[in-house]
Image 1: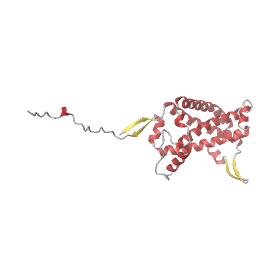
Image 2: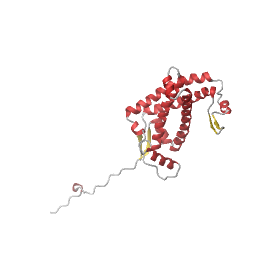
Image 3: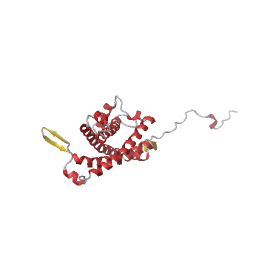
Image 4: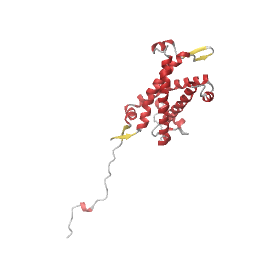
Length: 239
């Protein structure tokens, strides 16, 4: 028998879906800003393995010559990002849902078991509540990353007015590297998150839209009473 089970609250779903387009605009506008000084590479022994980003990437997305546009969008949408993140964080704290979200001392061991199960190297998935151990770690990490992006972003945005914040980040240049690294982390999270959503199927995706999922529940049958009610038996006269 299939039953409808509530899974995600309205506020959780609201902040989740608002965050997706906001972060998309933030990443896109951040690229327009980064183009003005695209100095970051991954280099080993004077050999550049990766240059962020190749020229064809800029040509495809028409990134060059749009610095002012990128700054305007980035500094506008950062307030939506901060407000939406603060709303989700406050909801998580006051609703008590943080108890289901935070990793515990067993989470890293169980997360490895989840990875092995996803790779079909383990036959059974470890027991879980609303979120499995890997999800607990990932969703907590994305909250920490959001706070980090806010702090480093403000340090870059107002390095003179917020010089104490820039100092805490290790200086302007280090704050910029940290901000860039967190952005790469968001992109990797998106890719893995979307792959997991596709793997989980429609029922899981619907739960994040409508707030409920359809689950199979075994039919419960009422056992036959072994005690016979004498009032239901035909009356036999012993006269």
